[in-house]
Structures are given as C-alpha cells and as structure tokens.
Length: 349
Image (cartoon, rainbow, N blue to C red; front, side, top):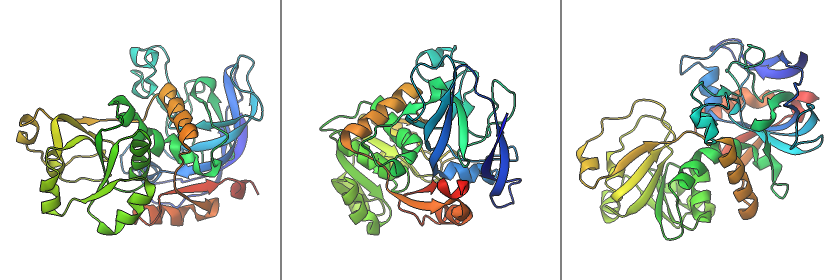
C-alpha cells in the first residue's frame, strides 16, 4: 500500500480538510495515475453531507479525474507512462454480468465500484476519490483524453459530460430533431453543447429569463421560459426529446405537454421523489418519462472522442484545493458557471 495526500471529511458535519489515504500497490492490470485536475460535482457534496444516507467516513470525493500515467501493471496493454488519461464515476465492476458484457458497467448486476465511497474488489477496503494526488485504477476503467482539448476544462466531461451525452446518444438525437434541455447548470450547459453539436434544433428551457444570453452563447437556438404560459402553449406537442437536468424535486407535468406523440423526456438530475405526475399527460400522446445514469466505459470514450472532434469542453472556474469548502457553498447557491475544477498542484505543493 502507498500513502498519498488527499482532501476529505471525517463526518457529515465536518468541513473537508487534508488527510492521508492509502492506495493499493498496482496489480498486473492496474494503471497508477498522477492526478492533475479534478472536477467538483454536486454528488460530491451530497456524499460528503451524507444526503443519500449511504456515505461511509472518512470520505474523499472526486470522480472527474484527469491525470498522467505514472506506471502500469505487467498485463496492461493500452496505456504507458506519460499518457494523458481520465477516470470517471466508476473504477471497477464484475465484467461478467449481462450489463457489463453489453458495455453498460454502470448497471453492473453485482454493483459497479464507485470511484469513491465504494468497496475495492481487490482489497475489500473503501475506495477514495480524486481529491488526492494519485489513484490506482483497473485498466478497463481508464479513458484516453484527446490532446487537442483544454485539459483543465475536460475533467467535468467524466460526469456532467457523459450524464448528458448518454441519453442524447441512446435516443439517437440527430439533425432536425427539436430538443429541449431543462435547467441551465453543470449538467444543462453540457446538454446544450451536445444537442447543438448533434445538429438538433436546441432549446434552453428555464425559469430564469436572465439565463437566455448565456444559453445562446453555449449553442441554444432559442430559449423557452417555462413560467411564461403563452410561450409554453405555443410549443405544446412539438418537442422530439426533452433532457431534464433539474437536480431537485419539481413538477414535470408542464414539460410533458411539450412532447410530441411518442416522444420522451429523460430525467438525469433529480435522484429523489418528484411532484405527482398526471397519468393523462402520458396516456394522451403515448409519451414517455425515462431515466438515465452515466454511460459505460465504451460510450464514455465515444463521448470524449466526440468532444475532441467538435472541440467541446465544460465551462469551468479553476480553484485551489484549500478553497473546496467555499466552492461547495457556492455550488449549493448556484454561484458557478458552470463547474469548479481543482488544480491538484495546490495539494502537492
């Protein structure tokens, strides 16, 4: 085992602070990565505060990791020292179940191993995330990063990026489709970029008129203010697809009225109970509400390659590790455009 510097929390009521954690010695299929940048996801805050009731402490968050390979195990074929790589929300799975065999490791029937707050298959110990100087990951869960991209802004692609790309890709969004992205935040801003790059007529759907200018800069063709009843009526039964990124409980009924017959709204933000849904809004039009998690490793690599081709990265604000507690507060106050990324040099110095 190797001891490395990290930033984490000892309890749900404590701030994050510097600590030491252990990384396993590299096994024959492992890649050891020097972490350069780590994105800050709202999930990191939920985990640190134990909002979902499953956090185990001490906890080191971080699942949007960009770094360079330090060394590899004897059986590693695809990576070598010095390669620019990424690690997302998972670091292992059984690789044997039907989901894993279909490149859907996020739905592993044995349970994917989360990058943090998971159980390491090899050691039986808890996994720790990217708010640390280095990490050891099984080769199959390491991703190649296109070198033409601004790597400071690539980190959030490993969660916010794949979370929005996966449903757009799965539902085969294409040129000529009318797509609405609901909510302009860390997820929503990536949804706009991807839908626009896929050729869709892209609408930002928001309660906040002041977000219109930003949305158009990101690639939205138009902005629909959901509090404007007349505007909502004008677009009734006209959308081919809706990507709902709102992260809290809300009323989805008004959005269902926007869908065409046989069209789908996919939920990616609210992992909690929603306001009651009127079944008539589904039945009258054979409409669908679906959910989507992240993507599998194959799809995540496809997303990164797509980003390389279209020069897509996240809009980020860089911070030092010491500023993470303030960053958590600002995320909760929606005071960031649109993701924080930690420069890990600040932890190594």
